[in-house]
Image (cartoon, rainbow, N blue to C red; front, side, top):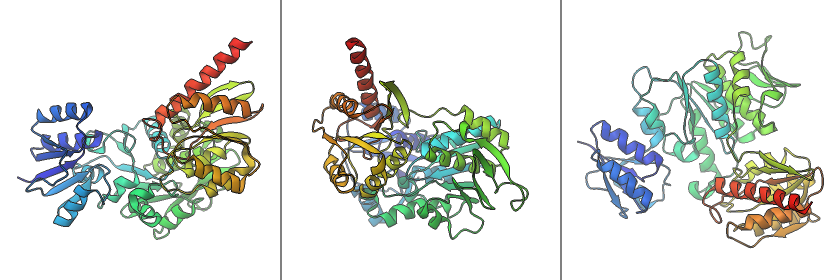
Length: 458
């Protein structure tokens, strides 16, 4: 009997172990952390015959396959497997190989930013069309749990980590939303990061790309018939925007002469240029499966954005407070900053090797002030000094979670009527918070406390 080693007891690793055990395979899980959650997961897996080894970063004897759920190639366990000639696959690749006959088509997408929003928009559109659909992958539901279920389509969000370990995926349609520097510490270079994103196109039935994004356009260039989406008026074979309409000139009977209205800009929530791009990508993926235009419009209207993505928290004294804590890299922060004309910017965290010069240069005309937090705040301050030297800065050195009260107090002091206080950090949260939702919740809580103080002072 073959032996599979699963790297890690996270959500995907646990799902892989359970699915393989149910198929009668021998499975050993290797996990570095012996915490309460991990011990509970190991106890459950023991009940289905799966062994968990804590602390050991060694390959089990006789292992024939290693399934990783996001560990990088330089991790000692992964490196040992590769050196020993053991096949290494990701959870998504494994799920693809385990698909039954007549499996649901995959509509897959990737990108540096916007993945979860676009995949949830896509799922909403599919449901509006009467299709039984589920959002899976990097969105939180392991693909390996869904492939055996009777869905009409799977909306699959894929990260660069997942794509790195995938080699045979052939989705019905695949979209790349955008590509900008991120996770360079994991991949080692921008070239390797972009190459991982580009893997999604290699066997896709329909290639869909952001025609406004140079790197996505480059990745799609080798594929004749690729469908671009754009915020401009669409050319033949594209989906784009005409005045206030989302228009299809790709999935129509006569792309030369015909165009079909899909929705209006008012149907996109929350409205921002990058969210319009997300909606166009979702629409293109759905249209590749024959979804009618009416369902595209209804699906976008029904869509409920996830928290911490341009979430309006409150308006206090004619100043808006917006939580975009999900902006964990400069590309995401740039999209958020471009959505507001006058911003007091709350930024900082772990930049993961990314450069912020272009971000600050582009945002400079919109910046009224900045409040900086986190481990890499000095790098953002240096960029502001270079490109927006007249913008007032407040440096918050506190690293405890209560620092957000000081942040909001200082931002409110700096803001004028008509400004937006925007938490769009451009960095990861782990230097100060458990995760980006915790950072956003701390911001929202501090805004609520600001309102309470203002009302008490009246």
